[in-house]
Image (cartoon, rainbow, N blue to C red; front, top):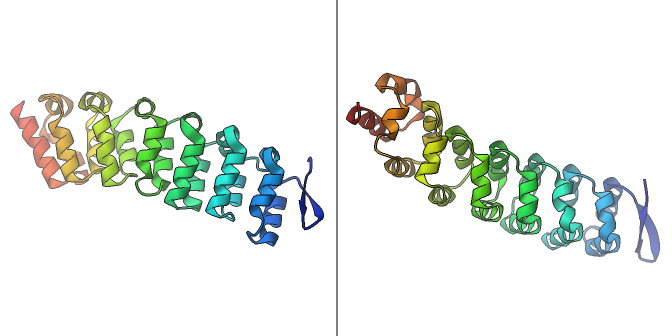
Amino acid sequence: MKEFFITIDGGQTGISATGELMAVLDVLNGEEDKEVLSQLGSSLRYIIRNGKELKSVIQVLSHENRLFLYQQLGEILAEIIGEARFLAEILAAVPQKESDEALFSFLGREGIRKLVNTADDLALVLEWVYDDCDDLFIDIAGIDFIKSKIKSGFELGQILKCMSTNSQKKLLSQLSPQFIESIIHTTRDLAYLLRAMPADLSLALLDGFAPDFISQLIDGEQSLQPWKNLLEEKEFEYLIKKIRVHA
């Protein structure tokens, strides 16, 4: 592997892999981290080769130096992270609002879209996003992109349950009732979607559906019974009422 040399206190040190970079940063104990990263510059992309290695490095850096590292990696940041699961691991490793905000900002729309391929990816990342950074992540990714990844009510439920109530409310406001109806294919879809949110949100969502949507989806009261334990009492009563009205 090619070595990249840095000068510290008049002496030269060669670095060719993440382990060697970590050893240097450990010895310096944070005092000259930025100087090390600055000297390596664009060579960092050849030293930090994947998301797992990036996670190891950022854990020993201050917030300021993490930002500097992201800046040095530039356009290849998403390429180095590689997959949504490694993005999630990085978010979990440094659970700080300002860190998440910086990472999403440096990744940008193009970078986030490279990493997220499925609704499962979305749920995995959102599970580890710090507090209200959910909104920022979705805003940067773009609501049309988010919608393109959600194929069922179950998938939307998996995403929503990883979000705060306020963020759930905002996301639902960006998804039209018509879109949500279009991805609810079965009673199971509906049950898992409603389970993901508090009753006040779920009842407001149900109120926005077409008048006969519930009765067309659920084939009678008996078809709803297997899903009763997933629903809150108010939700179950609401659905029964809709079924009976249009029976």
